[in-house]
Length: 300
Image (cartoon, rainbow, N blue to C red; front, top):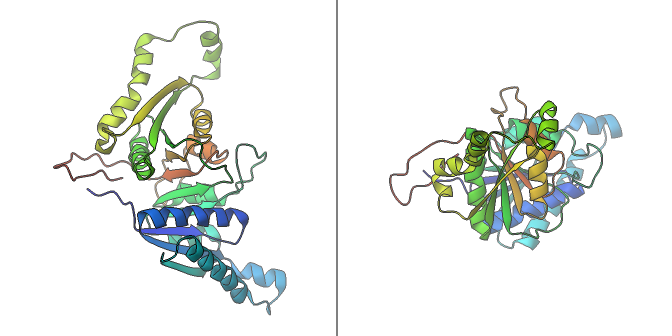
């Protein structure tokens, strides 16, 4: 089984500062790993007509921005083939359609852990919940200080998909993987734990086994450099904290594709509201496979 490490990378681009950051991130990734880069500006032309009137030349305005994006990519990565185009329609639906069959959909956001308010907007959340491919959301974050990819792990098949993706991402830069499993209790039980009441050792042993069990289920992860981090904490808060200065955070979501009304899992949603670094969301359940030879790899 082969991991989809190249294929098409689609960047949602609208000329905003966050879109330029997403384009930089995607260009660097494709230049190092291969594949096709597509820059797509999705715009509802009815809005342009409503704001500026019927004589406004929206097509020329959008094509000028895309030409600048093409030139920027060629400056960053000479020789990299890039396709630019604009499509009609509300951005979320148009980008989901354009990314059908792609390996990765990349969008930017101004939202970060130090920015107050829900500045991410609905677009990245909608794409992450409904895309059939991996979605990367790129914030205004500092350059990585740690060569680490952080991944959230629980007992679900979606977390195993995230683990497989995290190991693959880390392998390209020689990064280590921090697998984070955080468990929490209802508010009513916090007082008991905080007052010194101890959790059952059998319960703690089960929580400590979550990451080793996931690694055992994902062959590509078995020989990878992985640090296990198990702690009592809100899972999203734990990932956000560990993701500070990291290369990326990888999470799974229980979304089932754009043709089904689906929501992000609460952890994925909360991480995307407070991104400390690029976040990759994979929507697919992990496919449990047994390698038949040394060249076989995982899929998700």
